[in-house]
Image 1 (cartoon, helix red, strand yellow):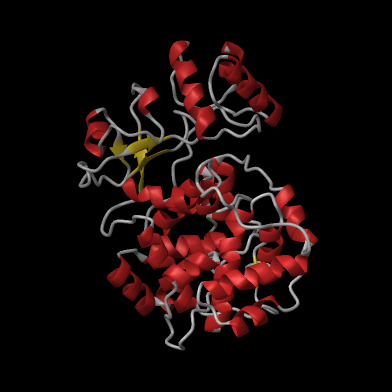
Image 2 (cartoon, helix red, strand yellow; image 1 turned 90 degrees about the horizontal axis):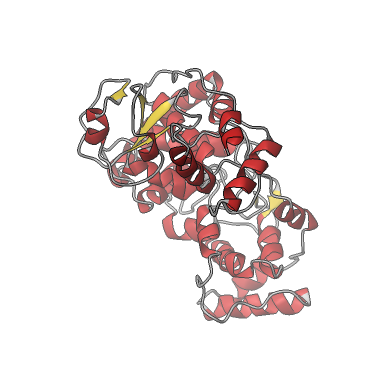
Length: 398
């Protein structure tokens, strides 16, 4: 998650758990003396059935990592456009390596699709974007990172369960508390998964009796496929498809919102670039990351798994597009999008939208889903094409 390639965002599961009411009234203890805190963690692990020896071994020598707290307090924000991010990450080199990986592990990918319904390009794209096929997995001690974040009183309810799961991985021989490293928020391995998810969806792909996502490509491929299936991926269905748009379209209906099928869009003149209209009965959205003059995609229900994996719209759209490229799709048509706003201009736009009564969340300069939705409403009110793309003309109109 914290590689140079992935936005510095907490995993969707952790973000979802931070919502009000997501937890029972009693929250795990945090802060205070580290030894007392670790004793409480050990007792909780034993109560869950983990042998005392494994809990002691997992926590022996644990310490607070100030660098983890620094990363947690200074999470970056994701302000690149789709064109900027996708062109940087979906490179020829990555595509070539991805194609070779799919050939080298053809039998493993075949098993993944047979058992979990997830095709090779979908897994491979995540593998590439998360860690460059295992080359950049993070260098934070996983046990210490989770101890740090569970002990810290900002979000212990998110990380204490992950620490308990890490102790269970120690019990299974799948995590060495002294040497296993990963991302600052506790994700491990070539596809960057959290301990609870590894426990729930881990697959021993190479038959050695362990789930080693750091060193075993078969384990990583099959575990990722099983996890993606759990997020709702439907076998045999598309996830994203590049389309061309007519000059006239109900732009206010674009974006990730329900109510339309692919067939409805086709009837309005939206045309798949590859000519495939066989999924016309599926629910579908038209997304235009950089406005009506830029690239356009049709997204299908399987696109939702990308949003579950990572909440950044630019990351998820790029990952989904990457998977189509690995599946044989051509480079997308960039179009001629209007220039977007600077960081300060975006904050000004958000402030104006907020003053008009829209909930855009934090004034952070990011054209996220809340800002896009509010912008579409104002564009419609002003008689402008409601494509949700923030330009200087829209800012001036407001």
